[in-house]
Length: 384
View (cartoon, rainbow, N blue to C red):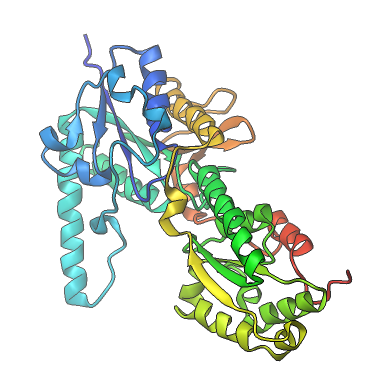
């Protein structure tokens, strides 16, 4: 009787609410069809692949391991980023050392996967996690060409910037957390007639800042993909027009990636411009006070939303389908490594190489959501 291969599951990169629900869904779906199939949980992301297996992995896990985790935020498996899997950069001497560290990490990781008879690895994470997964998969197949091995990715990122899916796990929860912060801080700024610059996560993409600003009724949003959105002159013109129309407080949402493009002191410089603007001073009879606040990692916290848990269930189950059936129901089979995503209420599968090539998925000024923000937010030529 042929030996049954094992399936490994890990969570990687930044934590996202709903990761636990994805692990649970993959586990239950795999076991429902093949109760004898061994499932392994690797802890602390990819780092768990290259450490002592007795301390970094859980073998032959049963349903008690996933009991009640659906309600918990973060990831019970732990996560982290592995510097060895990043693209090596630096001076030639340093580069050689980094390449050697990468080779050593990959050598141990694939040997452990081979030893544990893992033929399929489910990776729950974002863009960087999928790039690392591809490196591991390519190294495994080059090292053990006679042994089947494939990766199934499940997109989990509060940035929602992964190609091949309409939404990624964790985005809705983070969105609700940020909108909740906007609603709470509105009470204070309205009472004091102030402006607030609210910094939210989004290193390269502005989806979280943009959608939370639209949903929270912000006056202005600044995102890294659109230089005009974070131009100080343009923002102050909008606010000046607002006070002339009897606006007496403003909420400005800015994605953290703006600070990398326009300077770490972007928020402070904007605050000084607003407080010193003569039009605003004249309209209010004095300067408008500005405060700077950051939602930061609070956006990641708390229990996942109902939508994120539902999405995690859909994608975890789809990952099991790809492993056991060779395709997502209703979709044509795809050979090799894939990422499962969603299009509306349906699961879809996209080749891992395509997802990596087109990620991160960025906001464009032609994006329907960006166009909507321009209709709903404050404009310097607003006619009413």
